[in-house]
Length: 357
Image (cartoon, rainbow, N blue to C red; front, side, top):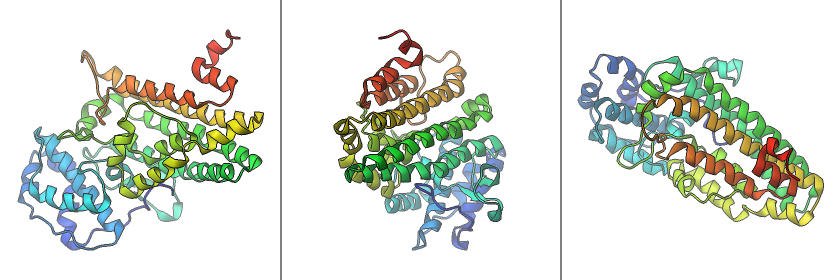
C-alpha cells in the first residue's frame, strides 16, 4: 500500500497496555481534567524488542500522549515517563520526537470488519485527542489518500523505468495514468471538507501544534506528495519541504533521497524526444499537481484562514506562513513544464490563456 502501514488490528503486549488504555481514553481524562495526573502516575516503560507493527503502535500511543499532555497544560515539555521511551522509539524509526503525519495517520487506523475490505466507511482510528468522529474523519481521509496513492506511486516508478529504457510509448502510457491518478487523489483529499472548520480550528488544531521548535503534524510530511515533485522534476526554492523529511520514518526519507539523482530523468527524456503526445502527458501530470495544490489551498483557506478572525498572521501546524508558502509551491509546479502550451496554461491558467497568443 505504498507508504501506508498495514492496518493495526493488534493489542499492545500487557506490559504496554496501561499506556494504550490511557491513549484510548484520553478524551475522557481530558474532559475530567485529570489527564496530566494519570500520565504522571504511570511508571516509565522499557521498550523491548518487538515486531515493527507493535513498535509503531507504541510510538503512536506515546506521541499522542505527549502532545495531549503539553497541549492540555500549555507547556513545552512532557514528563520522562513519556519522553524516555518515545525518544528510544523515534531513534529506531529515525523520526522526530513529536506527533507526526506517521503517528497521526499512517500508523493510526484499523479495519472495522476486515472482510469488508479497505474503504473509508470501514476504517476507524486507534487514538484521538478529542474523541470526536470529526477528528477521526480528519485522519482517515488522509489514510484513504495514502492508500489510493499507492497506484500512482507504482505508475510514477514505471514512468521512470520506461524513460530510462528509452521506451517512448511506455512512458506516455505511464504518465497518462499518473495524471489521472493525481486528479483522482485531489477528489479524495477534498472529502475532508465534510468536517466542521470551526471544530478543526478551535478544538483539534491546538493538539497538532509543534513544540520546542519542532513542527507539528502536517500533510507536508506525506512522502507521497514529495514523491510526485521528485519524479517529475519539480523544484522548490523553500527548504521547508526537505526539512519535513526529518518528520518522516527513515525508510520513507531514504526512498525519497535515493530518487533524488533521477529527479530530471523523465523531464529530460520528454524534452529530448520532442514528441507531442509525450510532452502533453508530462505536462498533464504537472497540471494535475497544480490543481491538487489549488484544492489544498481551498481547504486551508476554509479551515484556517477564514477561522482566524482578527489574528494578524496564521501559521500551519507545520510552522509555515500558510498561504504564501502553499501558493509558492503551486506556482513553482509549472516551472518544469516541457511544452509551450503546458507552460502557458500552468503559468496563466485557463481563463487568461483564452486571451493570450
